[in-house]
Length: 283
Length: 179
Image 1 (cartoon, rainbow over the protein chains, first blue to last red):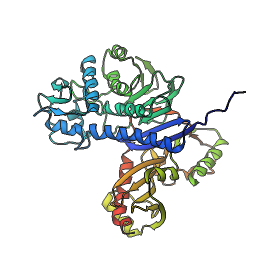
Image 2 (image 1 turned 45 degrees about the vertical axis):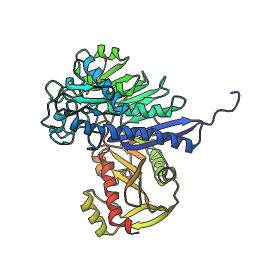
Image 3 (image 1 turned 60 degrees about the vertical axis):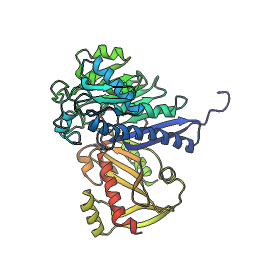
Image 4 (image 1 turned 180 degrees about the vertical axis):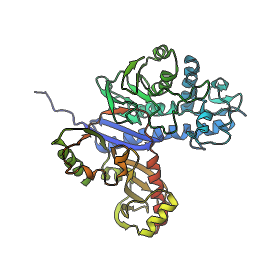
């Protein structure tokens, strides 16, 4: 017999289209529906804010404004964009340029990103980004694209606003974070199955993100930063990390870097590569 | 809710035979009532009987460039002059029930996914894909994965939702705004 009454756990699951994908928020807590709806609302509010700041698709986003004018004069930026950009630059250096948030012109040329004006002709190279305390400048025209990192950051922001005292999961189209991840299982879609099959793994950290070529009809959306050629490897890369921003960004490093395992160690992350045949390789 | 009992009956129908497995991820989220409460706070809702004419369907399709499949709408008008609509989206890999709140000026105020049923390729091309499993003979087992297991994978695109919302805002512009 269990002493005392069991707490009345209430669960709410919501899903909204945001960040170009489906964003699910699950919360279980000793609270009524209204309280859980409010918590979800706050989480979605954070995600919507990240989208409004960092979307490449929206001409009025902070990112699009940066891309239009940062080569002319330093552009004041939000604390959120600063945080993402600071980590992006740290990872550019740590991965020897395998992670590079400036390859957008290659994606625009292949129709995977919209052209906001002269994007396709723009040269790339993260070294020209000059990040100050509260502003950013480019030493020549550049097209910054935070698509490989901002989704993970949005998930982190959403989970932070819900708080660790609740059992919560935020999953933005496969980039996910959980407050209580120990002992939980997660399904990872295998490449080559059209997403139909999943393999089950134990969560190895608070967050997990996966990148792969599947679902992209126009070829791989991950480009080799040196040549801007699309990646030919059809493996998927899944990264467990303490933050979803880190996990999201490191999936690209896992697919592109020769010494990916050592980069994972730097960021307290672990990575799995899954092949078309379902074979799993741990980095 | 009707669609829930449909899924339950599918699960029962599928339990009896066990050959090739067709896994179907089905996830349910807010109920219609919860979505109304969340998207239309502070207003009262009145159920409206809206059926589009053939001409209206054609015209909405032409303007939104999205196929209009159903004449009859699940629509409520809010006391603030806005609308709450429950609609179904058929994507390449999924069936999605959504709720959309529109303001009195036809602006999208919120979108909730109520239910997400996933499938692939040719199955989705058939309009009554789900119905085909009812009473189906041996040879196919339907598994409905209703647990809340979290799934990671390359990002699924929500482009069909965007198309569905464009169709509904066009429906507002051509029909609902006059009601």
